[in-house]
Amino acid sequence: MLTHEQIRAAKLVDNCLKDKIILVTGAGDGIGRTVSLFYARYGATVLLLGRTQSKLETLYDEIEALGYATPAILPMDFAKATFAQMNELSLLIQKEFGYLDGIVHNAGILGALTPLEMYDPITFEEVMKINFTAPFMLTQALFGLLMEAKSASVIFTSSSVGAKPRAFWGAYALSKQGLEGMSDIFTQETQNHTTLRFNTINPGATRTNMRAHAFPGEDPNSLKTPEEIITPYIYLMTDDASGVKGQVIDCQPK
Picture: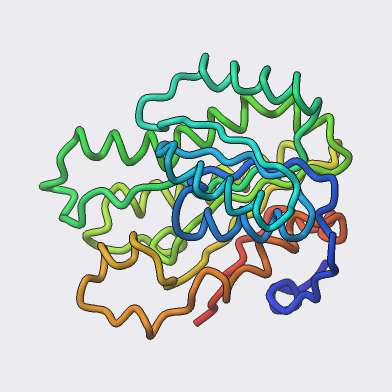
């Protein structure tokens, strides 16, 4: 298997995602938006899932204007989404495409930065629903479509506070730690008898709105942009990465 260093430095071939159908959650903003654009650039048909229709439409227009494969817009608010709605989404994708080559679970919210002792339970529940429960439900709902693909790839998004829980990061840190565990369990349950692969990416400190909210005093220009950390997101979706399973890949190792 490739080392994480080799994955970060992988040489990407034009059209390495040609004809792949890939769903990206949180596609309207930040890393999700950048990932969607790059997937389209490398040949994929991207299913743009997010809660803000206008942001998805802007991105759709951008991808169309660049002459890439026509994407699809899938508005869904994970805070309110039910398993039944996710199953409906699965039927929609089944009807339109017949299979799914990949999912990038990128949607997430920060919640509150406060001691657990004072953490508002309603906020806690919302963070866990969006960051942790929704990715589980969506993966389960789309599982059959992933199995229909030749070699489907699922990417979860973690954080430095997921690998090592950090004081005051509360539900966000716990949700990310949970996602790393979920990826591991899915890997153990599928690696020996399917071509499915589950991996987690920790983007590290990246210039996004979420980062700015978490660290308001930080100079955003000192951070890498999503474009600068994109390689593992693309490489893990290629057929060349079919042997990479159950890894947690840091885009910016310390």
